[in-house]
Length: 72
Image 1 (cartoon, rainbow, N blue to C red):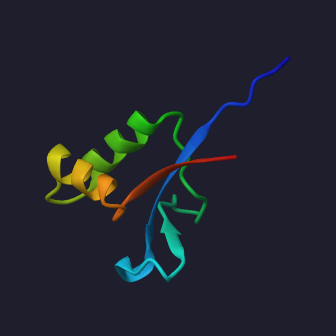
Image 2: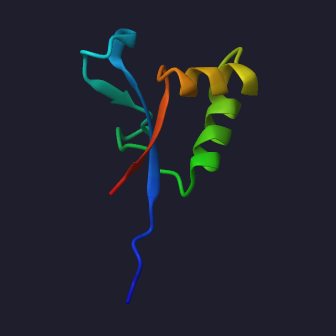
Image 3: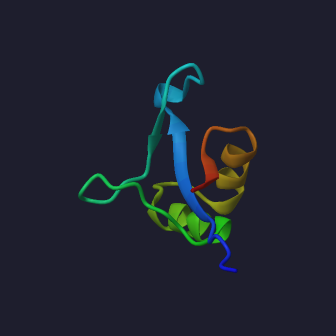
């Protein structure tokens, strides 16, 4: 039996408004970036977000400003 490998995507609500749809981190060809783990997605954000440290990122994830979510 083969197991499903879980991937994670990074998203946020457009303009920070939860009634709006979500926008995702994408590559240069507009493909959604997928990560092998929650931690690897978080590491990507820490490397690429300007003026963001781990404490700020954790707060943004906890309050839902940034979402790292499993996807199929």
